[in-house]
Length: 517
Image (cartoon, rainbow, N blue to C red; front, side, top):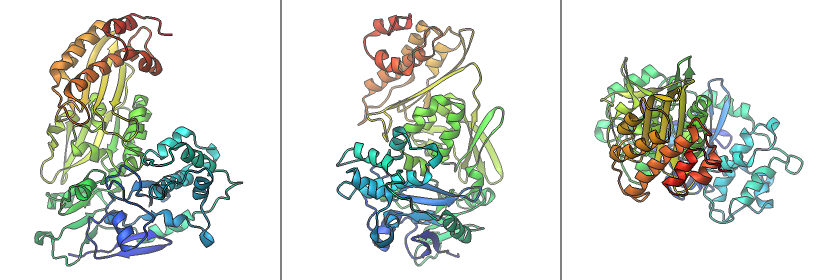
């Protein structure tokens, strides 16, 4: 077979890399091969943010898009056709500091040196991406930009202060990133056909030398998937990357989905939102929140911005994790998954896609092509809740989603789904039966809460006990009722303040319209 060099834009020039393993990470390449050691390794699983870098690629309009990502779990071949920026790129003439760096120093936000480069790159991505016409970013926008960086020394306040101060152009003259020059360089190395890369002494995968293939068309991807049914499909590498860095697994042949433009599309018509399997989590959730504002908090709390910039909704679905935060909400909304093998496609309800613990209905040579989500109707009442030990970047103990269609106070249809309660993301069929056809009142909600106990027998693990999960699931359903009842529905602040304190009698008084002010 033919093996191509990995080509990417770095430090003002096109770089070509040969002879490294296909699963060498960007972080390993920077530190071990290039000897640019500003980028650090902390957790090697995309949590701490010490390894944060910024990648650039061309969007569908040919414009340069910059994204903060975790270098520790991104494989080097995924950089082919893209740009890479590290903390070394921020150094100005004669060693002068970039406004991001200067503001960190002036606001006393610099730390021991281990985490600071990661914070700096997350802030640089915000600095370059935030439109100046919009004024200063809010503290919430800054917190989102820094959600993938875990602080160890100074605390967040001086870092957040620096993230606002760095936009003061009178104090810190703005340097220019020549986006046009970078975009022109990327156009020159854009591939018209499948990129194939293998490590040294390649003789073919059958001899134990895995090959990284990245097709550029949907038909090409489908053909290669049929030809190599045992190849590992790679999307954002936010889970598969850990198989290599933490479990030391050999992946074999890799089939990369990230260069297929057709799979990055997001389209909507009058009834359906269709999200391509390669659309990033950040892009997918932005569109989902447009239809379902109730998903805004979950979207913000899904992992971190660098993970959402790299990971895909299709990958999250195909992974089949019982604690994947996307699935409960999508199942409750009645989403369908589109599967393709060769030229043939089929569609399954999302809940039917999961057969057992990390086991899906995918057949050999088949792949997830898209997700179809129904558009909201006027009778829908929908909520989703994530319960975890910290607000940002944490795995759920329980994630619940509730979707009721209500007409004249009566429940026409009910869909309830949970993650973290079973071996797969799973609907609560008994609770749904207790809800369907009933009046949406406190008595109905209590019947459904009781039914949840027979819908799930959750595990006890390091995140939560079985009893805790069962109680939380019941409370989440009650919270849903308090927020969506006909008479005096509670606002979020009221629910947080009152709904989870007191006993059932107190909650019943609330449901009866007790003055909570």
